[in-house]
Length: 238
Image (cartoon, helix red, strand yellow):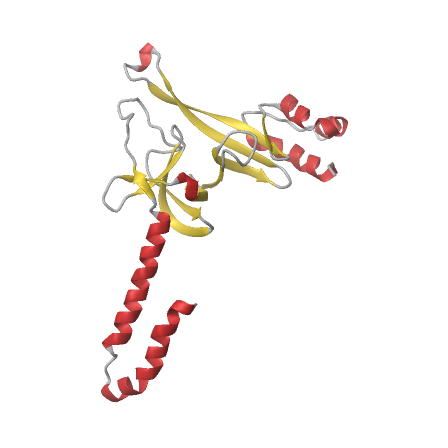
């Protein structure tokens, strides 16, 4: 709010003069323009903080990005400050977030400054949070949040390079994902019903009864299928 005081004060001081002359003083315009430029520069310094991304795997078949080789429309939060309508690519091979650089090419954003981001693809919105390596007992990096309550269900996208001979001399990218259940600040990898029940062992009997009674179908191929059981677990857990 304070950054607008100078031009506002100048405006009211010189307003009578401008009414007489019919001319808007250049001083007000210059000061206002300078403040706007400073604000833009500050935002650019926060958002565009990183290094130029270099594709070291351009000879590998397919690509290392999530969903598409094209930019995806999204938003990002850095240091608690949010930026909307940002073009983003998520390199899941290196677990790095990219955006167009002013000088051309792509900028690899400073991961240590990123809090979260989201991207849209085929009418779906995907929200990611960054987990610090020393903050929890488990993996680190960017995770797609499927559910967040007292516990959390997260999906980690991964790409590797298949070096099989029939994929060519440089191999081919292939993608898979890992599902994690976050409970009491500990990450538990889960792939099916048995894993989930084991993590919820303090309420095992009730969980089994809930699944059976409600005919809940849990599949690692459909990560969202875990959510009804997780919600029930949170409702009965003290």
